Length: 201
Image (cartoon, rainbow, N blue to C red):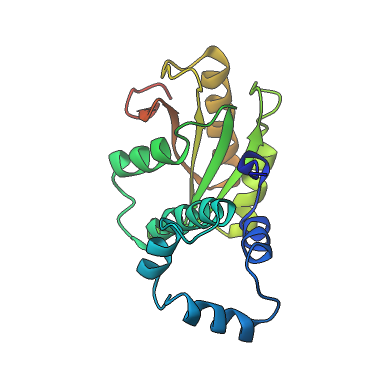
């Protein structure tokens, strides 16, 4: 039976699932299995997952894991001063999500991305997205600046009145916390809108 990946919330859960689908119990057995399949690199792993010898569930889990790995690789880049790059990253990240999600992206003084967190999922309103939770993670990460984003599953990029009120509340909280609030992105259908660029706060 194919796993419903919609309910996998963390990389740890995904890794546990991946290793449970392999015919190994120890790391030594894992090395032996990789050697038997001729897997010496990520390219080999991609080739195996897309080939006829890989069981369907393992192929799908491997693809999901590799997709998450590709998404984390963008953190290595230091050029996060470009709003179009951030907007495109967020639009791709949330493409196809069926529920609204609200994310915080946390940056250091040099604008390196040091953490990202999905803070809420479901029907968003101002009472759910409380500045306290957004800035709690800012303190945990020890960041200098934050950007928030949420998706509209309908694909529309028009911010709602709740979106604008939420942004105003976050801006006020950022002044009190002395943490820069750089932008709020609305994404949908693979596109994005920057509230900062639209002079909406």
